Length: 500
Ligand code: GLN
Image 1 (cartoon, rainbow, N blue to C red):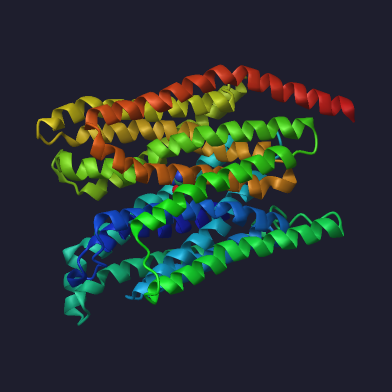
Image 2 (cartoon, rainbow, N blue to C red):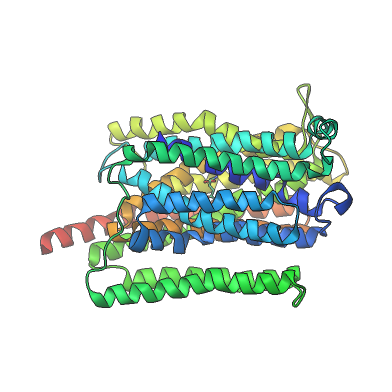
């Protein structure tokens, strides 16, 4: 319960702010926005969401080695809260400072709170995947309420602006009240965490100590390098940009991220495969982690288009009336979260039901189902997009169907992936490997942002067909790999047990 509610509030703050971040950046200065052009807002948004997840790698490692997961969650949540407070001030410098603090804080909190969930279950406990699925409901309860409260009501509604005016406050500051609400959400999460923390007992309480002085020295060196790269460099570049000494164009920013992300991924995965394993069994498990990484990156690259190409499709090609309700293009973003909350218990029960009958699908099979799901969701939009080519608005039911199918795919992959990472990771690497999982989300988020560019050069229905083909092909590959991978894991386990 402690972890459920802490993560609920953290995600409330994340998704609450994400819901209107782009709108705030592109809104004219006269209405309280930053007046950025679309491309600039898009790149900042893509880089920010990619960074939020990428920082999970150093965040997970720092918890493993120095802080312990429990402290990392506390410090991370505190940084996030100050990040949103900084965003609540209407200045450009506080805007960038706020985004950076939220990204750093999430890097400390997100992977580590998930690792603690994993530590609640012993190896082989059939309730692990279900536990993660319930945790995932908490995530989405926050993700569902947040866009409605922070986005639709505080940032955008006339009702709130009128209320501000009547209280003698400039209605253009509505955006900043919305950022402030995200800070309040994180504050609730922290209070709740501090009170409930004792229930976590020893799970994630202590870091794994270095086994000798050489390792301790090496760890300190890596820590120094990490702090330099992720804190000193952005602070220097940011100050130069804000003071006007260098100009940060969207092109410059994206060309850095284009290189930084794959290089980080290759370095981390390579390091893990070549230096991470202490025996054959660990090596086999780390190979599986790498396979799951690639699958998840492609999955999120498709799925996270909810915030990019799919919101544009909602904005430009979809009718806003549905069964008597008037929707906004952003309203569609709450659909995924509602579906998760409704369906997560069904999936949790399904895995337990199947496990009891010894029929639970292997992790790779569940991942394959997730990939096929995200592909089929896009397939639904192919006829809709054809229709839209004629200049018509299509009914809201197409996107609703897409989100329903995407959610089923997500529930086969995302909570299962979280669970698998905690299961496959050697204990001393659990935080780092959780970071690797979120690195896949980071790549995915960035690709989902970059996909917008493809839609400007491809016909919409062809684009959606491509978004069907890629994940479905990958899903089939995972189905094929499932058996051999299971055999490899079993063999390596027998060999290590036999070797003792
Ligand atoms: N929606 C989930 C969350 O916020 C998963 C996001 C992700 O890993 N890309 O935790």
